[in-house]
Image 1 (tube, one colour):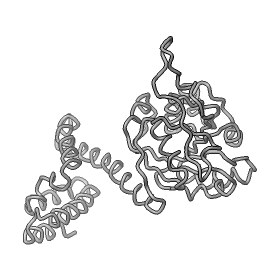
Image 2: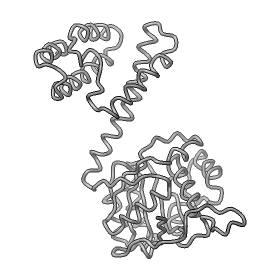
Image 3: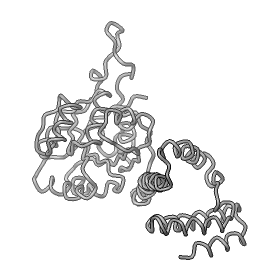
Image 4: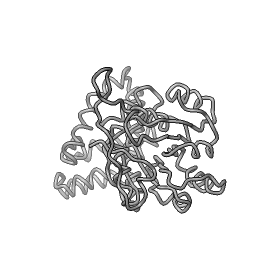
Length: 324
């Protein structure tokens, strides 16, 4: 399947228009190159940060053309020059006016004001695909643009972006949280597939919970790892990353493959004495780490008890040790 879309063909009630094949072009093989396929889109990027420029590169590789980008800081202008050399730098209204597909890749808190501001400025959006990449929001945040005739899409790439060259290669095979009006769902999913991702449908009302799960898992994981490294340094370990790498890699693999059955350690064993010693020691070194340990150990004990891994009497002793 090689779906290609145009703004006019994506109007409610219509599906995407199929174009040519997906085989890359090589001279003399008789195959078309991506940019020669029908229904290629002019793309504009409002917010030329790490995410916007990475997705712009992915769309370019699929044969679309990034024609303009809004970039304020010197760093974002450099990203446009490096990653999207064919794009002109322009104010957001001009970027939107020049594009068939507009990427609003700005911070979450700026998105509502940007959507309303473009409409207030009288920017023509009728028939244009307007896509944001926020995990927090569905398409309701684009309501002012939708009322003005735009076609709203919420495509959230489930990946961290560092600004390094491997941002684009990391898109291959990752999930995108997709929310759109039902008639635009084929269009949204087609764009994700063209960028190398896997579309996963998220309903509008589930977006906050979806995003909380991702942010909690990814962001707090980094915090836990950094905290563990600091504690190991305090214990005299010269290379804590080298020590933690195999252990944490195995733990992550166990959790993803086995769920709670992959749990090991003193809480899973009901070893209240060890847990109590941990709490006492952490209190001497890092009160913040002590509080986090207690909260996570309680959650772990609850899950282990519910899964039948922990006997009620062992859970009771653990909870006594965890009483703060």
